[in-house]
Image 1 (cartoon, protein in one colour):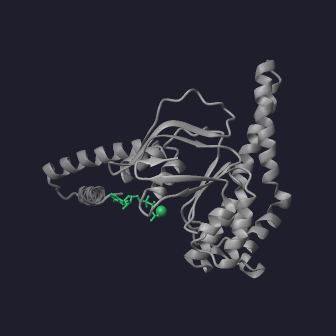
Image 2 (cartoon, helix red, strand yellow):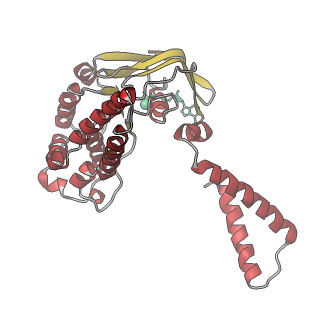
Image 3 (cartoon, rainbow, N blue to C red):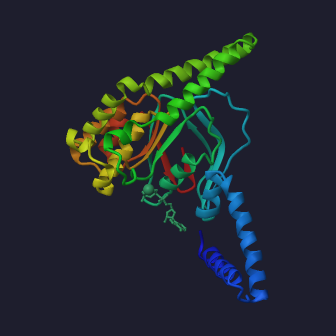
Length: 306
Ligand SMILES: Nc1ncnc2c1ncn2[C@@H]1O[C@H](COP(=O)(O)OP(=O)(O)OP(=O)(O)O)[C@@H](O)[C@H]1O
Ligand SMILES: [Mg+2]
């Protein structure tokens, strides 16, 4: 909420109190305030439906344009967008560039300090570019909040996604009965993808996998049971990283993931990410880490990229 709206709301509340007590309120001022409040309420209501991409454009001045797309395959696993320009406060960070991230590749994103790598990642994570809905994307940009949840639970709590997947699978199974041959093929493909994902999130093995990831990132068994509020920001960043790895999104976007890690955890992460079999798009200032993990390099120089 901005300063103006806070002030206007406070004034409106004061006026309402005065009115309740039968005290007079200045007609001109209250009219102005009510009009302003109504305007702000309308703007706030419009923002409820606002996409993350629109929010980035409005609040952070990050704007992406691209060539109009052919309709994307509903189960696409690759990202491919032509003629992309991303600007930040009016200056182009990349210009008229074809942007492609293919399934199975690990892209190391390099470029001079301030060339716009973090901003571009933010734009991708906000889906400012047309990324197929079938691609779930995880961008690690903030630490896990300080809560009573033990670190281990924070990593493997994915019940919401599991429930949604199970519900969708049930729906598809119902729809299969009435589908023609072509539709059945598409539905079966989706069903297979859903079951694969459910296997990945398998509750029976979830705790052990989450614990192995936390261990790799430096958490002793005792630390894994401690609430996240007992950790510093840096350690909660490790919890967030562990969660990202555990979730295994189709496209994992990491901006300097080694920043909060000691050498041992960096080595573990390098080995772990070197096995990443989906899409990885990451920035790291460590040349060794880059070499150990990536299969492809993406360069970002002012105005040109990819
Ligand atoms: N409020 C702002 N208005 C205009 N330009 C800004 C603003 N904030 C940052 N910038 C500039 O935007 C550019 C992109 O910054 P960004 O952080 O994305 O680069 P980066 O490649 O991630 O840098 P680094 O390697 O240091 O992490 C930089 O040149 C930065 O100075
Ligand atoms: Mg950066």
